[in-house]
Length: 174
Image 1 (cartoon, rainbow, N blue to C red):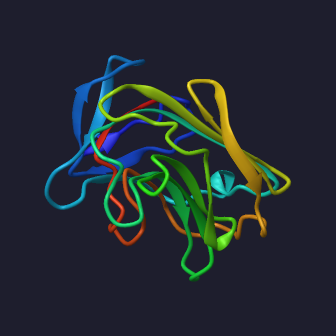
Image 2: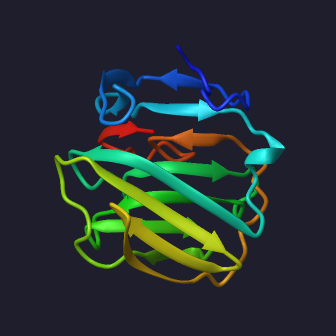
């Protein structure tokens, strides 16, 4: 299955187990739930490699706070153990976390900023090691990353992490 990049940048994705469902913004969303830990894989591209600044954002409708370390919304991964980043739901704080730019110590949003079974807009900004979380346009915490993002030389994955152990359960819309 194939998911077209509507931005025109050619970063089309391969759907593996995720299905179309009613959306919030675009009319359709991707449903991530069920057997075989569904996800979408976008092949590596140099222009998807963050350096000094990046923003990640999505509309999410979670049914749980995730499996394993949390429900991964989006991540850029590398072939070396310390490469990449992942933007996840966090069951530890019922909020969000950014994992990777702090090496093995994730940065968390404020506590209890997300709710289950509701559409919410989630975003994170990273500018020169300063991380800010947002939920529905409102600030939701942040902090200082102890490392810059490590070069991403692997694929971009939506709805899970590179090991397929942090499945997002629910729907993601753009």
